[in-house]
Length: 327
Image (cartoon, rainbow, N blue to C red; front, side):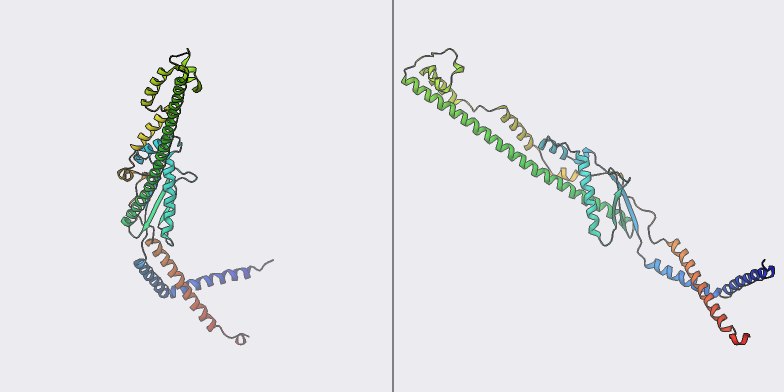
């Protein structure tokens, strides 16, 4: 069973120690106030030289087809089989270029891009940090315009190359179709000429068959000499017989020639839409004055209290009588 007197003495000792501690802090209030003031001065000095950080943000989404100038029309003519979603394809390319652009600012990272909604790629938040609010906004606009121009130039350059390749392919096909038609005409005239020679040799003067269209080249002489001469004269002056495919290619080529991938169209090309325009920030990110001042007061107070308590501990140790004298 415990001694009630011992418990009371312990509680009394704890109260005395706490009172002594508070008394030491009160007696050392000048030291504590001094350290707090020094900490505040240092904090103010830091705030005076620290670079401010303001962040402008914008939210971008895929462009409407109308924002892509004449590019969609050109693609539809150049490659009718292209089933890509042009708007999303252009936007994805733009976002990847923005992501690559962030690397140009290393080791600093003022430019940042991330999905507005996690797990979705239909909206992105782009931000840029600078020392003033206006600089942050202007820099963000400049980066977006720069990357938009890069994206536009890339797509128009690729479209121009694809247009050139397609036109070359169609011209090659047209030349081949003309050559084939010329060869067919030459073979036909040669067959008729040979048949005329046979008709002259056999003295065939009149048509000796009823079904003229069913005659093979070897039997054409049966048309008779006069008829063959007339046919040769007529077919020699006839234009080439060209297939429907030839005229279809001609129409496609004409449509391709009318495509004008102009600089004005390039300038109007927008690879994204604004869901939120680049903002002019009103609250800076850093340094946080109020937070820094509060922390400086707390830190100064803790340091001052530590100094006061250390001094008190040292004084108590010095004033404590030697062990031999306590016996």
